[in-house]
Image (cartoon, rainbow, N blue to C red):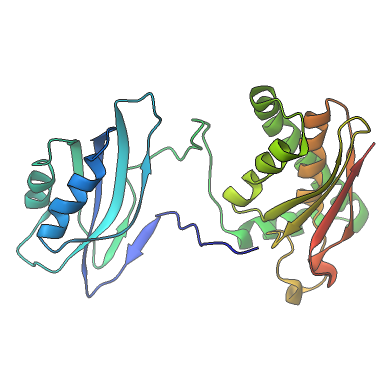
Amino acid sequence: MSGRDKDVMVFHFEPKRKVYLVSMHLENRPGALGNLADILAVRGMNILEGFFGGMSHQDKATLSFFLETTNQRMDEAWLKDYIESSVYASDVEVKPQVEGLIVDSVNFPLTWNTGDRAVMMRIEGVREMIDTILGTQAESGASAVYDLGYNYGKEAWVNLVSTVQPKNKAILSEMLKIYSATGWGRPELVELDMGGNRAKVRLHDCFECASPQEGARSSNFVRGHIGGAFSAIFGSEVRASEPKCIGRGDGVCEFDVSR
């Protein structure tokens, strides 16, 4: 299972280069993005990373990116005027570096493309929170972490299931790829019995236990989340067990879902 890194622009630090944060509304029509790329290329400017967010029914979309220029005479005011020369661009904001550092302070809140607000945290911090709960008592801590994951998974998937209404393995396999899209791991729906409320899911590179060198760990939170998600899918309470876990030396995390 191959993948490509999914970078989310947060900050850029490069003291020896001239980098700006650029954000705008761009007309949601064919040729708009190409027109902007062309006028930037004419002046030798390079888009380092960014995002383009818009829905098909919207007239305009948000486009933001970190932009590098080698022309020392360009400043944020000149750059703003120049970008607005594109008939497709409006509401342009340009922010300069502060001693080499530029942070995306313009785009807030962070949302899924469904419009639901989200937050982003580093894996190390999430693991530390989970380990703090586990540190209370091994058995009760693991149960508490599972319950957190279960309640989160069930709540998150109720609306998704009501929207998509999955009826077979193909569409459910596609839905589970949300775990990959949000950085949790790369899922594989191995078995599915809708009538019997049973499933087997493999999760490659599970974030909760992807570093076994830190010591044996299990996917208590993710296991609970999968149990909650399938409870929403089946419309009946099920639980998830984990016969295999990369945190215990297995090649993959594997979850059996059943009543």
